[in-house]
Length: 434
Image (cartoon, rainbow, N blue to C red; front, side, top):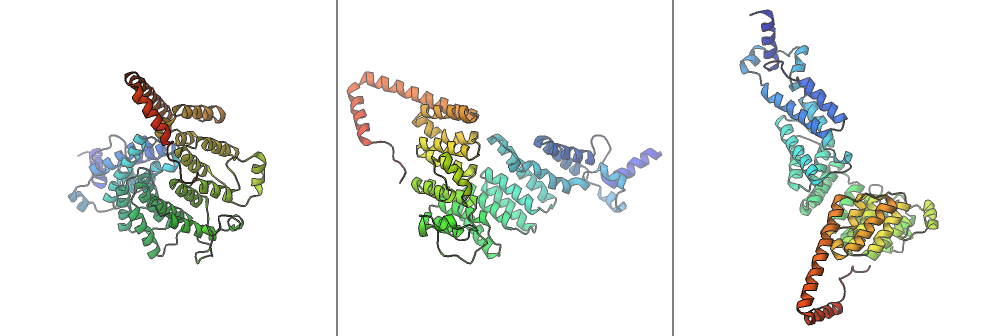
């Protein structure tokens, strides 16, 4: 055996590899990091999988492990994938962070969820301990996908590996349960959180308000919102509000812990809209922001001295969504105008909240005019999904017209009678107090 052959044999025994052909473990790890920096999720995940595959194919022989139990030499480490596995587990999660993605389709989201599920399996096989931020990233992926079962698995794995859950972890898990429709489990997590002495945050309260709203408990949602109002650092607007004791009562022991943030406020708007309380929804918006739906320029200037909440895009989207749902399209368009005046730019999602299959089937021409208005006045890009909704609704309207003409030609007397009855029956039901 010559010197080169002996050198390769010793290297094989130390690292468990069978040769030096192809990329080394360090090469794959560096490529993965480069793809992460370049915002290339597919490339990063491909190199991550290659690194895992190399790890499984370089299992050292038991005899070699007994003969060479000492630590491999530093110059042999780059050939192996093992020294980089745990760092790879920690860094690959950056490509699964949905907050860094500005837009994604359903297939894209399904791909991310598939990667997240595979990551959990691989991390569990390597006994990799998740950090608190890693738990939040995984829960957020499954929350957006509305996969409650996968979120439960992540929570169980984090608990078994000894992760000390903080309030952000509990909030992420509650949100995942809410998005998946597991309301009973969400209530259990809230109780578990309190039993373990974890102090809730403003986002915990916001999720709890949404939870009450989803389960139809409007009064409990109002009480929780009242608690946020009581403990707000600013009190001028709420105390002088004509809403009265419905949203303002005596202070509680949680003073300084809870507070009325914009997230809590948005959730309460959503609860009111879900229950059809449009008048109360607009009143709440005006009292806590100092803005009316049809605010003038002078009102906007006076808003600068207002001490209340400053609405964000989610605030306006809640208002737009529920007004469009109850077919108050004029108010929805006025909210878009107010949104622009307040410095919040309308986006394609804004148009999608107005033009839905339900609203387009009711009046496709009105929806088309609103799409043109938002595109010309605010530069909102009309997405392909909105175009398909309008085209489908127009085709259905034309088909309905053909059926009416055909029925009229066959039996005009019956059609006239049916038309009279429809006119007497009135229009579609409206919200409770809009």
